[in-house]
Structure formats: C-alpha cells, structure tokens
Image (cartoon, rainbow over all chains, first blue to last red; front, side, top):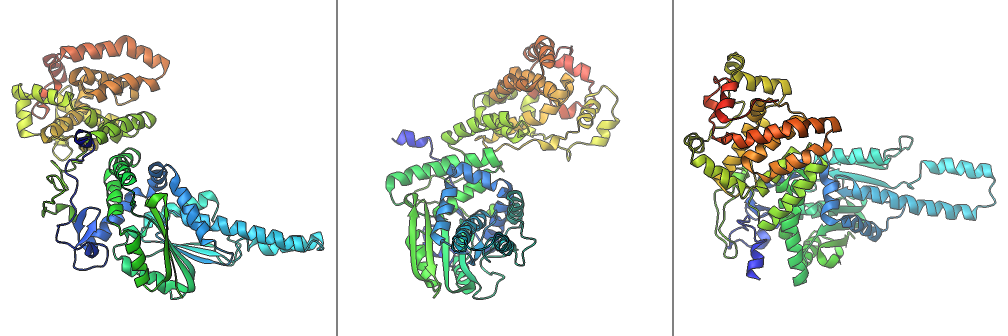
Length: 318
Length: 245
C-alpha cells in the first residue's frame, strides 16, 4: 500500500501555513495580514492580484476546462441551482462572480419557459378572442418574453466578462434592443464592495465564485445589503466530502488529474493547481452556514450534491 | 512575481521536505510518476490533435525523456567541449546574440546562415519553452540546450520550418538524441503530409537524415556560440553530417 502511494505522492507539495495559525484566520476573516492562496501564504493584496491573474489566464478556456474536469457534471449542478431558485417572471437576479454567464443564461431560459407557460395558460382562458386580438397580444408580450425579469452579471475580472458577453451574443441572448429594459446586463464589480444600491435584488447568486473572494465576510455582508427584504441568497460552491473512501478518491483525482488537464487543455498547470488547493482551503458546509448567518441571513440551509463535492447554501433576508 | 519569492518555509509534520514554490529551478513543477504518465499521454494526444500546441510537444519531451536525457548528459560530460557547455551553461537567446555582428559575417559561415534561417522562416530563438517537468536541474539544462540548438540543426541540415523540414530534422534528432519525443514526432509527423512529399521523404530525405544522424558525433557537444565564424560546410564535415540531397 505504501509503495502504491508513492506513485501519486507529489514530491514537495506546497505547504499549508505554519502549525500555530488558527484555521479561521486564514478563511477570509482578515485577522492579520496573512491569507492563503491555495496552499501558499500571501498578503491580502497579493491574493487579490494572484486570483485576478488566474482568471485572466483561464478565461478563454474556462468553459472547456469546466466540462473536462467535471465531465460535464457542473452543468447539472448549475441546473439544480436554478431549479432550487425557481424564479418567477419579474425576478431581478444578481449573479456575482458570474463571469462567463452560465447562471445568467440558465436563469433566462428558465424564466422564459415559465413565462411561455403562463402566456399559454392565459390564452387558453381567452379562446373567445379574435385572431387579431391574439396577434396584438403577441406584440405586447414580445418585449415581455421574460416578464420583466432581469439578470445582472457582476464580475471583478474583465476577461471573464468579455468571454461572457461573447457567449451571450453567440447564443443569442443579446437581443432585446427593442425592449425598454435590458434583460441581461454585464457589470464590472467587486463582491466585497458591490456597485449597487441597497435593497435592490430579489435573488443573489454566487456560483463557484465565493471561494475566490478574499474577504468572504464582506461579500456576505454586501449580499445582504443589496438584497430586498424577502430576498434570497444562494451560493453554489465546492465543499467538503465527509465519506473517507470517496474523499481519498476525490483527492487523488483533484491533485493528480486536474492540474494535468489544466496543462494539456489550457496550457496552465498553476491555475488549476490553485483551483484544487483553494477548494481544500474553503470552509466546510457547517462553517459556511455560520458565516452566512453572521451576515444576517435567516433560515440558512445547505444541500449537498454528489456527497459534498458541491454544496448549495441558501439564506433569506427578512 | 512578488508573492512567489516567499523564502519563509516552515516544516509541517505531515508534509515531506519542501522545495518552495520554485522547485529545483525557476519554472520547475514537481510531479508524481502518475502525473508524468498522464501528462505524457495527454500531451501526445493534444500534440497530434492540434499541431500548433508546441508546448505539448515540449511537455511530451520532458515527461518521456527520463532515460534519454541522462544519456545525453553523460555524452556531454565525457566530451571536452560538451563538458564546457555543461559548466558554462550558455543560452541562445536574442538578448545574448549579437545579431548585427552575425549578419555581418561572410556568407556560408554558421552565424550568417543561422541569422538568414531565422529571418527567412520568421522564427526567433526566444520562443523555446523553458522546461517544467524535468526533476533534475542539470537535465533541465540539457533539454533546454537541445531546444535552443534545434534551429541550428535546421541550419546545418538546410531544412526549412515547414512540416516536411521539421520531420526531417526530427528524424535526425531522434537518431542523435534518442529522445522518445523525437521518435514519436518523426514517426507521426508525416501523417499530415501529402503523398508526393511523403515519397520524397521516404526515398531521399529520411535515409539521409538517419545516415547523417548515425554518422555524426553528438550535436550537443558543439559550442556553437564560439563557432559563428566557422563555415557551415566545414562544421558539417567536422560533425559528420552528410551533404544534403
């Protein structure tokens, strides 16, 4: 067994911080200047800079890498998030760290189909209308295909937003020039200090982004601030696998395969090494739940997906 | 970068001894045997799938060179000129080359023809990838030297940088160095060539490249930077490279 282990024991893996450091201090609660960048120890400013550079370099291959690393399963995770959100037409969504737009596009699709069903039901009840009146109601609703729903994609990284905008155009989400209110907006902003006013959004999501925020507590406070009363906070993020067998397999896959995939597909080993290290450093489910509660959210809960590889945390502003 | 120069390294009970972020040399990424195997397989596939991924060819060379590289290093160690190269570690880079001086050398000299080759084919010696996955600092230099000398191989063999020329050089290098990456490149490179070119390749160029490779002494044992004035013909003769067809 020991001999077999040598096959994947990485020579000289980067260290965790010194034994004396309290784990909580390194989890974004800014006690002292030392923070973690994966398994490295850096200052706050350095961490922000390094993370910016990581996403700058991976932006173009971000989606391809996600599909390769998770064998496409990340799509299902994101679908589950939107289903859990169950947005109705008229919802105003803020997707933070939304970069390449995966959540935003799913939101739009979901709301559109809900709206379509709404309209169909409406028509069913109005079958006594003349064909002319039906056609006119189409015109009225054409601009309203989303029922006044809107999504704002906010990301700190210009490159990621650029990729997202290109994707939107490519997939046809950029129509709406005839609409009064744009249904999809792209905003450059920092989760720790959002450029939005208080009490503005119905739902706040952050999918695979909160791990990269340097001050998670600030990001949670900002989330609370910009949500309307009654608004919902949803966080989709890699979390901790408690099952020991699965955990070892997951570690093996993460540390042995993912950086290799990063090198082969994106030509970037280090960014994906950072990725797997940052996942290990991130607070586990219960701890994140407490942090969300500390920010003022109520009815905070979490749901494990795939045995805890990923978790969806949810909370409400009352 | 800033954060990378963290010199403070503390020993953790559960971790093995630490090499710091730099590994054994700048750019070194330590890898486990499993990772090397995966990298070798992945880079081979990717290099075939997308021939413009030169970084994948480089990675393939590094991850499969564990037998050939020590061999090369020993060949260099046991040769006076090669030994000097290992000691002095010269690098062929635009910053270290005096391009204007080389351009001013007489036609037919190594320096003049090398510069002509670079300009004709619009390549630069600075585009060679630094090694990442070689776990020995000296061997990392050996593979770096091999990469930087590649353009000089083109010059000595008189081959351009198109697919055909590259394949011929790869055959020569495969015989000379024994690097699996060269062997694979030589074997699979021709896949993308037309039938006519394949014929020329098979009947004339490859046999010549193989014979030259076998006949010639180790090309890494030549201190090229001290031989810019030497005529290419004379260097070919000295090395044992047969006249091109």
